[in-house]
Image (cartoon, rainbow, N blue to C red; front, side, top):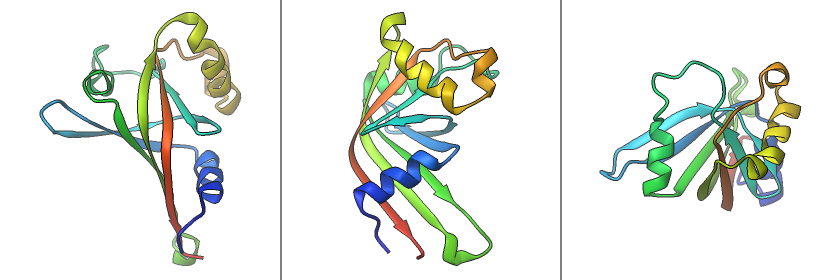
Length: 138
């Protein structure tokens, strides 16, 4: 069953993790798991303290080259009548100044207890969602 925009946004906002898909300048897809917060039609995710292989993250360079992104959240259950997924397609911007990162970082800190002692230092990726799509088994 196709989800309405409101139902898709609500289910997406309740998910704990999602996958952020970006595209390299050469056309190579790149997907990474993210923590996030939703504020209306904007999704925020930040570069945080979790170990990274490099400070030059591919998701950031991909967004600089091509800001079109997709974010996918889903719910799996052995009871397939409980399955659902939501995709948010939009344009990403990288926020890297302290004033513009403050409110998104507070949203993330309020959503994830792990950030309370070690808030994300950024940068923050802000995704303005142009289209919500989703499906649910019931």
